[in-house]
Length: 218
Image 1 (cartoon, rainbow, N blue to C red):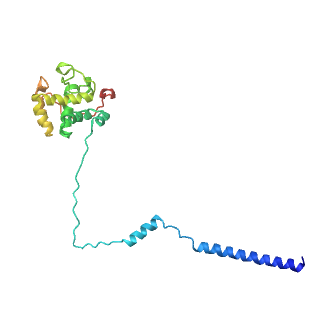
Image 2: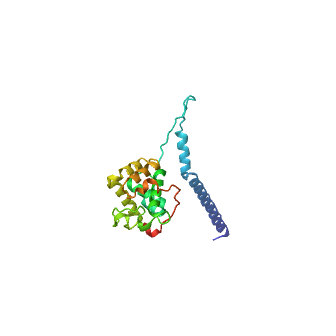
Image 3: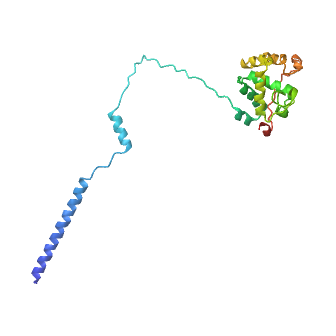
């Protein structure tokens, strides 16, 4: 093969390579040009929807704003909450809870004074029987014992509800009557044989908050 022939072949090969490269470049550019666009983001979708479905509301300046009255609500502590509190004030509320009577300041005050008359303020949980209640305690004259202060509260409410002689007490507890009225009903009832000397032995000073041992609550 002559030098001229070899040169011609080489030239042809170079031309072919150039053509191939050009074809590949055009193919890549064409593919890039026809590639699908990226999907819109969620934010872009939302913006498009808002723009397409935009609404307007015109309110006359003479329209008065509505007056809204919101109801009130409250919560009453249950047995577990009161037992966790563990005080004489909590036990008084527990008796009221067991009887279905309001846990009002008047009612709690009366029960605290009553408890103090029976066992004193500092040992109010004596025999787990703060009101010296004979109902279901196993002891006559209020000398019995309950298995826990929770049971004692329930039995105190039961005793008041079961005996007709206590009707005046529960009527006044139900009405959250003034303390003097409910206390007079206690003195007149058969709860204590001495009737608390018709009030002469009653004390009116504030009853301090005193906690009972955790074991007393069961």
